[in-house]
Image 1 (cartoon, protein in one colour):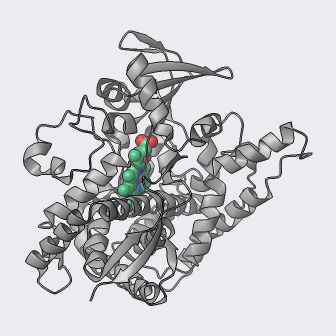
Image 2: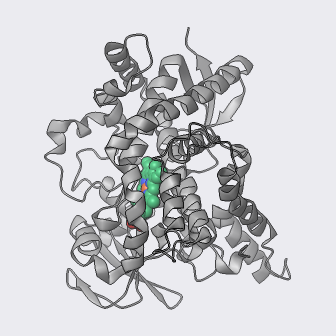
Image 3: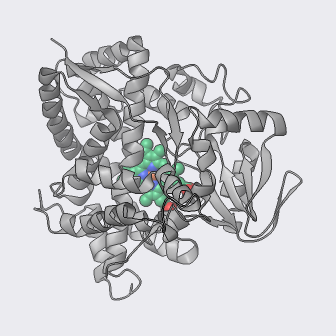
Length: 451
Ligand code: HEM
């Protein structure tokens, strides 16, 4: 069944929280405004926006209350993202969420990562060949697009056992067209000023039509290795289970969309921001190369060596502190609650701004400094609980967090040992807080091959 979506059902809907937050998006660093607000008014700020109450939280105790202690009182908020995610598990709550997550959980057990390892490396080698060509031509590349296409290839190969059957640059463009909330807002403003008779949602609808076709293309793509224990086979087994009527073909399609977006955009943003930070801190890039040389010699890493790449892991963790791809976790209050003496009403939208905790001097010394050593095992023990939540916390935390770190560690050591990616944009890079924390206008790089 094809579902027709338009702006009125998506991020461009005036009731959508993303649409309401667009004033933030016009700034070079929208997070600075939120930081100023929380410094002045504290960790809990209720805001009334057009008859809707938004409660902004930035304190670790508040995160704990909503994500863990009283988690059942807070449901997921995904209105604007339906066209991207359908009704996949990331969007649903309660018993059905649990039922849908259960058969997929095993695909993310650390024991599976060894099986994924050769396929992740395959995708990275393909990217490495492409970068060798960029190094020769000297052209400028957009890094988020580069890392998105790599992450999509990794999901297809490792988790679905399929060759990537679509042009990832085209699909990347489609996803960006839809999630560009500023564009939705400009279109609506033109309607208000009379420049448009009606809201023209053709681009977003076209983008989502192509996006909707991607899962079936993957299902029909050549199987790589006929592995039995893949995420895709677990999903297909749930569809075939007569005891599980809820898991129909639409559910298969929606789960795949979820992985192709949630598993790629976030992983890709982390790697792209990481390369930006390393371009500004070249001594850290050299340290990654030295660590890899010491552990792997002049060869590619083997699976057994990955756990020893501890500085590389710390660099990725520090990147997600400074630039958490999911900068806020959003929930809807299903019933009234009281958080630190403040009333929360049924229906309130709760925005837990993890970015603020990641940048707060309450929890981090010199929070704006890039210091991967903060994540050394000894220092990690001293960290305040819930002050670092790139993957959220509680029962709804990210299913793929550990996998994404393996993906990015392998990509980082392999690509950095062969290339020097040179950032050629403005410093500091500007950020845009749409659904994810993106670089405003992208991250332009030139690739130089090391001799
Ligand atoms: C750096 C990479 C990643 C980051 C920062 C990230 C972040 C997150 C966050 C914050 C959530 C919770 C959202 C909320 O509570 O509202 C989440 C959920 C989820 N993520 Fe990730 N993620 C990453 C990589 C991945 C990967 C690689 C996959 C799978 C291939 C994945 C699949 C999911 C799924 C399926 C959920 C929903 C889980 C549920 O509701 O039960 N993510 N992610």
